[in-house]
Amino acid sequence: MNRLFQKLNFALALTISIGLISVLSEMNTFLFGDAKLPIAISLYLLNVWLMALITMKNSILQSLNQQRRVAVAVISGLVIKSLLNSVAVAQFGVIGAAVMTNLALVCMLFVMYGGEVKHIVANTANWWFVGKLVVALVGMVGGVLIAKHTTMVLCHFTTFSRGQALVLVAVESLVGAFVFVGLSIWLKLFTKTELQTIPYLSTWLEKYRPHGGK
Image 1 (tube, rainbow, N blue to C red):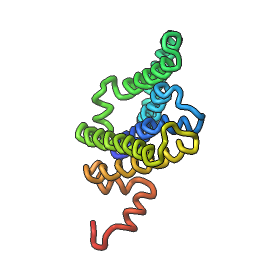
Image 2 (cartoon, helix red, strand yellow):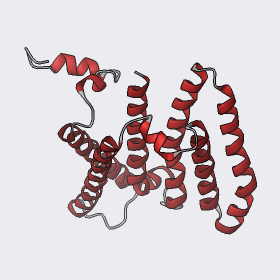
Image 3 (cartoon, rainbow, N blue to C red):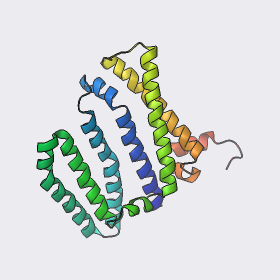
Image 4 (cartoon, rainbow, N blue to C red):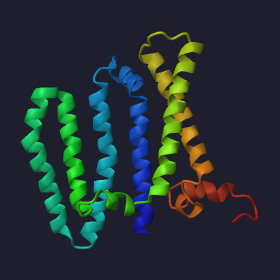
């Protein structure tokens, strides 16, 4: 069961991060009136995925009474951030700070997973699953880009105001979600058993399952 939840956590957190990055320009315009600092914010959005992995692994280590490894991981991340952040910010500004934050989180993951990259995938999913997930994510981003350009052409947007940005975010999000779910089903990214562990989705699957279906 732990492996199952790690797999779902790995995939859903990464999907959320990539999804937010793919609509970032329009979302920034809607929220703040411009699309400044897209690279820095994109790097920070990767924290969603990294922190999800860290939180999940922390829970497992705590349940196994391995608090020492958690402490070492946290200290390692803080040391890297403290030592390198000022230099990175001086050279690259906000982007440097974002990179150092991600680097510190990656360091924490390495420590928590025993210092080997393969353990992060091996303990959460498998390479075949990751390959299918990448295909679904690429399709999702492609769908978002097509939706964006199609909407801009149909609505005659050259640049867009906050209201127009909201329309784009809504359309892109719906198309991206539809493409990702469609590809996930087609590629059999998750088994029925795994899908039934997701809150609300399990109820929907049970409600709309064909009579006599397994």
